Image (cartoon, rainbow, N blue to C red; front, side):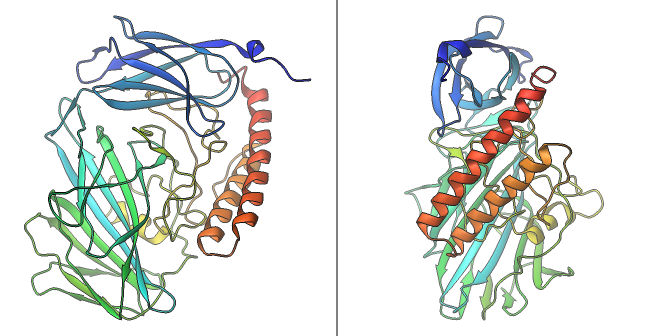
Length: 424
């Protein structure tokens, strides 16, 4: 027998702290978002003078709490049973001192027939501002694409957060100039974009930077040829994979970075590149952005999700911080509404959704019932990949995805039922 929505009525209390001033954030908008059917606003309120708020929860299910401060959004997960949350926000400015590029990583391969190039480009942006602030405007992160690029998918990842679909906006001042309207919060923000280029056997790239960048990395199949421009500072990096990698470090926007690729080839998909740790949770969508659900980028594969790379500080090797992203495939984490809260609760830092992506080898050891969840989630990744590869028809894709999501939701509900009392 169906249970009325009123039977699930509950509330979530919380506190919002402005970490720029280390004071309560008063007057911020707070919204409860349902995740069962996409992202739907449920109830809303404002923080009081002490940064406190109470949200009514009219029905059970997976939710996010969204706080808007200085026009930037901050998220915190609210799985079933959540009674209170704490969220950290930051003051925002159009330009924030301390925002620089960590890396621009490109994976390049041809179509099997050599009629086009596919590129997955991954930007790492760091915000070391003091005091900590968020950079946000109508163009917080700008970038350029090669002439003729056709965008196939894109996503963004806030510090410690989950990947979200984020469509770049073309800027009218110069050709091939785009911006992600996504807040650059303190810490490391990542952007990824997949695009296709016309190709007749060779193509000249002329990367154009908008900020100083620590590392630029190019990866392509060994069957293709890479020729650096006369003044381009690329050096070869040797890895035990069937690919070639070229790196330039400490690059300034004024430096020439041209290179030409020719030939045909596809990058390997079965590379074992070590196990990345799960990201925390946070950031989340701004405006119309949605959690990434498999429509983001081509060349994604199970285990190719956004996650924390091995040696995240690059203390062992400056290249190590980004190497695993390249070797692991740079695929987007295709999180689904049912799968993004596998851990049942989020981090204590007030960010947002907790998600354990598979490692580049396609598996992350988990204990107990979470093993089943991981298997189901990996199958969702596989279904998304097979769809992108054209192995599944639209009807087959819809049937498989619906069935897996139903089983995943049921498994998640059972786990929440057994752990809710001790892990609110």
